[in-house]
Length: 317
Image (cartoon, rainbow, N blue to C red):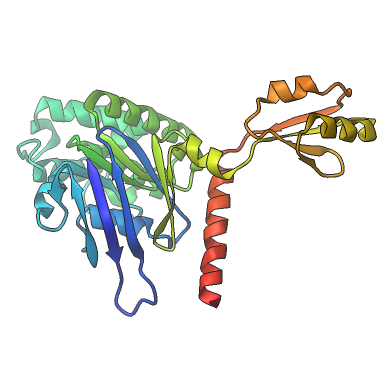
C-alpha cells in the first residue's frame, strides 16, 4: 500500500537532511508505527507521503500512485490527522466535517446538516460518539478546547473512509477514555475496511500494538521490524535473583554455566532459556526473584541512544 525508496528531503540552508534516504514499505490493512525523537524526520516523512511537501529525491507510492506525479489521486486515498490543528475556527465542528466530505465527493453538498443525506448524519453521530464530542459537534470550533479540536480532526479524517490513514500524534491532548475509545474504533475500521494505518506517537504503548515498527533518528532508519523482533534483537532478557547465602548461589550459578553479574541481587542472563527452566535448575533457596522482560520503551531508548552516540562519533570524526 505504501512503498518508499531512498526518500530524501533537505531544506534550504539546512546543515543536514531532514529525511536521509529512507526506504520501507507498508502492507494493505497493516498497522504501522513510525517512531523517533523530536526532529527525527517523522512529520517531514508524513508530509511528503501526503503530498503537502515535495521530496528532494527518492520515490514513494500510495496504492500504486506516485506521490509527485499523481498527487491528486494520492490525496483521494488518504486521511490525515496532523500534529497541528487545521480546522476553520469560524465554522461549527459539523460544518468542518461536511465541507471535508463534500470536497472528497463522498456526499453532495447541502446548506444545512438536516438537509444532508441520512448516511452522512448517521456517520457524523457515530464518529462524534466514538471520540466523545456529542452535540458539541454543532458548536463553533473557536469555542473548543485543544482536546476537543483534536477529537473533531479525528472525525473529519475518517468521514471519507480513507484507504490509508496517517495519524501524526493523534491522541495528543485526549484523555484516557477518549484514547481507548478511539483505538477501539480504529481497530474496527481496520478490520472491517482493511484500512492501512501509519502512526507516529510518543505513547509507546500505542505502538506496542503495531504489526511493524520503523524507528528513525537524524532522518535515517535505525531499526525496522515487528515489536517482538525489535525487542529481542536489542534488549536482553534476564532475571534478578538473591539469597541469604550469596556465596553458595554464586558457586551454583558458576557450576550451571549461567552468566551472571552484580554483587547481589545477581543479574542472570537468560540467553534464550526460559525463566522457569532457569529458576528450576537453581537449588539454593532464593529470597528475591525479579524477571525483566524488555518493553518497547526499553528497546526504543536503547536504539535511539545508540544512534545518538554513533552520530556524535561521526561528528567528531
